[in-house]
Image (cartoon, rainbow, N blue to C red; front, side, top):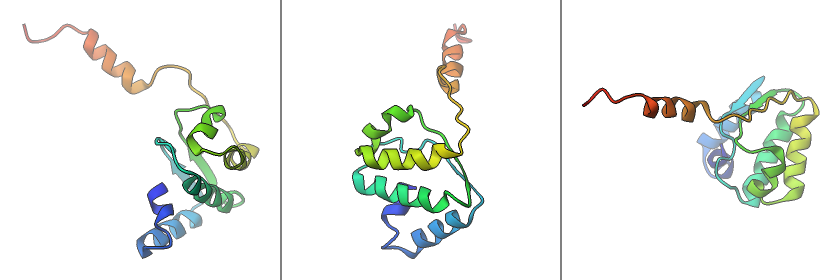
Length: 116
């Protein structure tokens, strides 16, 4: 999504994608900002969230707590603004257990090898 936002002024493809996203009633973003973003990217993401705020439902997955968003976004003000929009009418589901992917992998390592 960040790539699409950063190329919005450059490519028609990005403009079409963002228009489709803004027209949706439900937007799902899995692994939000798994890489640290710069301030420009964070601002672009805020603008999108702000545009979606009153007419769309947003589902986000992120492997960091809201307290850690400032580190990823690089700015307290932008992180606060994004969280303000997202949390205002939100239902937050937090998991403190290990990743289900890692749990399944660990089980495979714990099983005896079929090759002897």
